[in-house]
Length: 291
Image (cartoon, rainbow, N blue to C red):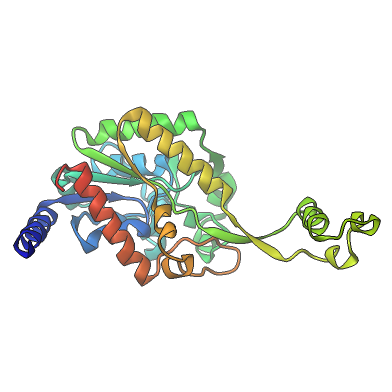
């Protein structure tokens, strides 16, 4: 029995070593590196969020699109951090061709369009300081739009064509919980439910008219996108993974870091990194039919 378990671990390790995975997403899918050889498009070029950014990066890597230096710097995260355009390398194309599986993390419906190119959110997002290095003209002329379901479905089809015949694992954001103020109707409902059955119970107590204490909710926009991506994956016949399953096994505070005020949870703790790495490793073995 012990010999069989050892043999299985050796087979899994050998499988992991032979696999090459292309990562198109954010730091949240970096945990694949704990188990597989991965491309470095994310670190060397950009973390991408929307399907439009993913397509643009795929076409940039495969030399299907050139981006002027004056715009390139604001399209890619590496350019924003270094304050200079990202230099193309033939290494990118080599890694693209070497990849056995493409992990596509779509975690946002918002897209930033400027002169026909899609900017990285750091270039124009005023919640963070990076936008201060973006020229006023770009800030002013950038068009912010939300993708429709139909658009995302078409984008996924295009991504499939771009990476064919390799397989795809479509990954969503993790739908964490956040604190949010309760609505007046919720306060009234709580007051009536908890009050005695008397005439006075129909009156909202003065103490409940004060600012409501926060309560825990999931992030609605993330839930919508997760559902949309799951449906899209089913339609297209590709694999889908929702990292939220980790929160069924572990408390959120063990998996996700606490962000700065005004920002929702979006980064894994060291424990979260390990947990996600194991979950992703198992998912890859299922997709590649190696259990």
